[in-house]
Image 1 (cartoon, rainbow, N blue to C red):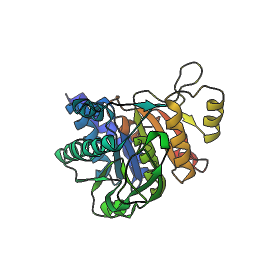
Image 2: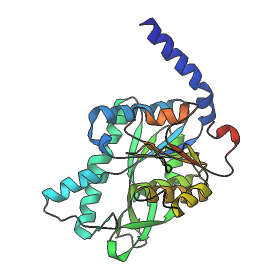
Image 3: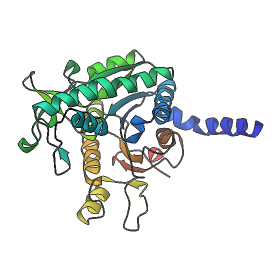
Image 4: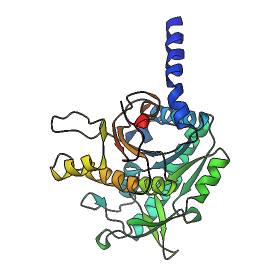
Length: 292
C-alpha cells in the first residue's frame, strides 16, 4: 500500500510543471460516444474536468449525443436518414435533437460534474446567441454552420469558477430557427472564438495514423494537408482534421485527437510528457509546449 501512495505522490510531483503551464489556460473538450451512457466512465470524465478546473484551468465541455437521439427518434417512429455521414434534420427531427441534447444529455453531464465537487452550468448554442448558424447544406435541412459567436457568457462563467457544458444546438439569423450542429464543429467554433490553448477531440480511435498504422503524435497543419492529399488521412478522420485546421486558423494553439475510451485521457494529454493521441499544433506554438 505504501508503494501505491509513493507512486501517487511521484505522479503528482511529475505533473506539476504541466499544471503550471496550463494554469489559466482555456481548454475545450468535445465529449461523446459510449462513455456518455456508462455511469462509471461518465464519473471518471467528470472527475478529470473538475480536476482541470481545480488546478486553475478553464475547461469547456461540448457534447454530442447521437446514440440517444437515434433511440428517441426510433421510439417516436421518426426515420433517421443520413447524407455523406450527416443526419438529415427536418423540423420534427430538430425538435427531438434539441429535446435530447439540451435536456437529457446536457443535464446528465452537468450532474456528473457536480457529483464530483465541481460547479457546472448547462447551455446550448441558443443561450445568449452563443452560436448563430446558417444552413450548412440545403439537402441536410436544419444542420447548421456557425457564422457568429458570442462567447462572453463563457468568460463570465470562468470568472465565477463555473464549468460550461454546451449542447450543440444553435439559433439562426431568424431567431425562430433552430439548427443541429455537429459536435466537433461546434467545439472547434467555440475554441476558435475563445482562442483556446487546447481543443481536445475525444473519439473512438487513438489518433491520426500513418501508412503503417502507427499513431502520429505530432503534426503541423502542412503535414495534415499532405497526408489528406495522399489519402493517408481518410474517412471519418477527415472532418476531425478539418475542424482542427479551422480552429488553429482561428487562433487555437493546439488541437489533440485522442481516444476518449482510455481512462483519464484528458489528464494524460495535458499533464504527462508524451501526452495522448495526435497533437496538431499551431506553427507559432513554442518549442517547450510541443511534444518531446
